[in-house]
Amino acid sequence: MRPSMLSLLLLAVVFPFRTASQIIPIRTIPLARGDQFLLFPSQNRPMGGVSIALEDSLADPFVNPAAGSLVKGVRASTSPMMYGVGFESGARSTVNTTIPIGVVLGGERYFGGLTWARQVLSSKEQVSFPIPFSLPWGQTSGESNSNTYTFWMAGMNIPGTAFSVGLSAFWADLNAVDGVQYLYSTRDELTQRGSIATYRLGFKGSWDGGRSFEAVLAHQVTDMRHLLSTSTVGPWMPFDNSITLPTLRAEEDKTLAYGLHLEYSQPLNAVWRIGGILTGTIKTHPKIPNYELMNIPRDPGNSTAWNVGIGLSSKGSSAMFGIDVVYEPVKSETWAEEEVLVMPVEEMYGDFAPVTRTMRTIENFFEFSNYHLRFGVQSLVRDFGVGLHFHRISYDMKQADHRAGSIRRQKESWTEITFSVGFGFAFWGGQVKYLGLADFGTGRPGLGGGIVPTAGFDLATDFLVAPQSAIVVDNAVILTHQISFIIQLD
Image 1 (cartoon, rainbow, N blue to C red):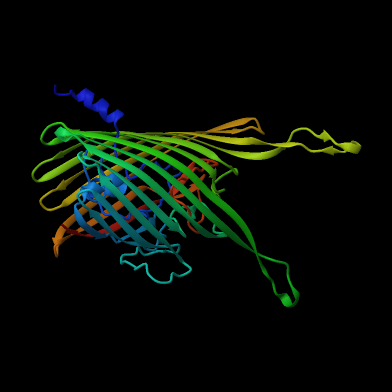
Image 2 (cartoon, rainbow, N blue to C red):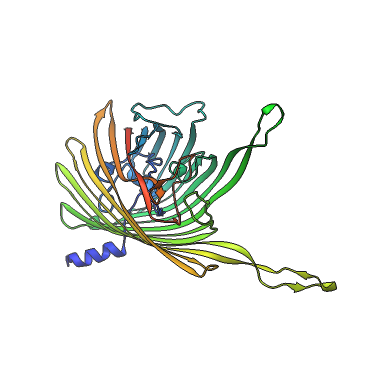
């Protein structure tokens, strides 16, 4: 019996979809971050990044390692990328560049791949917007920081079935991550060192009639260390000389995340296809940095995030179209802890020893209702595509101060918009693809009309900041260019 549209929609909600990551990022501020982690080639990224009901043979193996079964033979690729962030106030960041090199091998039973990338992020801002690439090789200056990325994947096709399993590991060795230079003060010189490691176990299967199902289990470890140095002028010395005394402060950013992603899709007819996703992420935050934008120090935190989405696509003889709609509820809690005197205990000889215990002095509760809308169209004849991605972020924050016995509430919301365009052509037996992105709706955050000054870099995965008052930003536009060279050998 042919299933009804209602039953397909229910399946799309129960058996959900693919996103760029199975670990859902959480942000409480509209921070301009750039496309630092855009390392891999993609077929659908020019179409707004639609993915639920539309297969992406180039990008899927990096999202779900079991999708490495889509590659037959040898596929070598490199996808140089650069981006810059420009602000309304006139200051613009210098160009940030990445050059990855990768290969994926696919056989009848086994498949695997390896990608390595070198990146340079600049911490200096200039007025004119950068156009040319700057190659990220050799020594870097004091105004730039280098990162390296390594991706490894291996898997197998299960004999006698249309199913495959795979494992992957992604390691980012980081000296800088774009974004949080706007959350620390310019009085501080920030040095950063750390890593992000992501491990995935994936499953992919298909049945008669074009039905397909995917599942990915992911684990991510974020471990960053920040050293902030503030120079102060010391007391006057003889002969009218002074000394500069550095004041050091160390911050840590640690998060453990676990994610489960499910996806199901099937054709409606010869042209249209429907699909759905469900993604769940659980995070613990043992250490959260004490950013300048915060009004209180805080210690650990916990978060849960979900993605529930549905997608529709059509593929004809000359063009294809796709649209994704995703609802993203998130809950987070962070708190500050302090040693509080409880009761003195009398010791020998009449002395009293203080007794303390750790108590939560301030708690922050966040409830998010976020949405994604992605859609785009691409020509199959000229390999030209355009798309849009709308990301609406809104949350309510409740801050409970147990010492003062007070509760403060704050609501924040903003919309991030990404325009995408891409084209490709055959060249010397391979493919050349261009991707251009323009991001609007984020910026340099401040409070109560003031702009927080800038200094180094920090991690861009989660920004769980409890702001003091209404957030304002110096609006930014992020321009990204990526050129992919792909060679396929059977």
